[in-house]
Length: 136
Image (cartoon, rainbow, N blue to C red; front, top):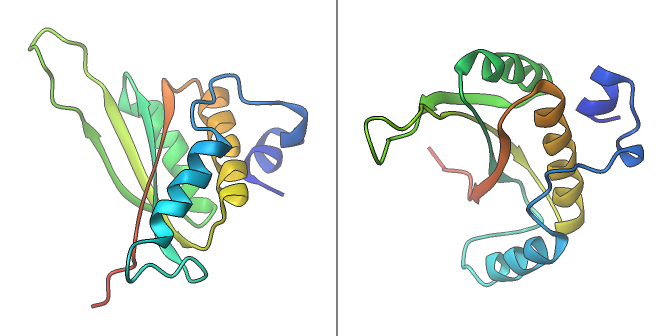
């Protein structure tokens, strides 16, 4: 059971995210490219970063609480640099998790996070970044 169904009592398969931008085809291409990078073992955990945006930080705080309770590590809430001083503020939430994914599992995770952002009224679930886990 994922975050969405636990919190909101809805089966994620019943409700497609309306604001989905990242396609399974894009994820498949990403994984193909990742497999070509030396030192990236796709069968071992990688460090996955997940990003959300909003016009104010308060709703991002709520998302942070939910995600931390689900085992994500909080990285930061920060405001974007502006092109023009009069541009409105845009706040970002960055969380991360060490996980193994395939294009299919990442697509399902993205769907869940799109739904979470929508349900919480956030501006967006903006996507992911990934890298090897740093060795101390």
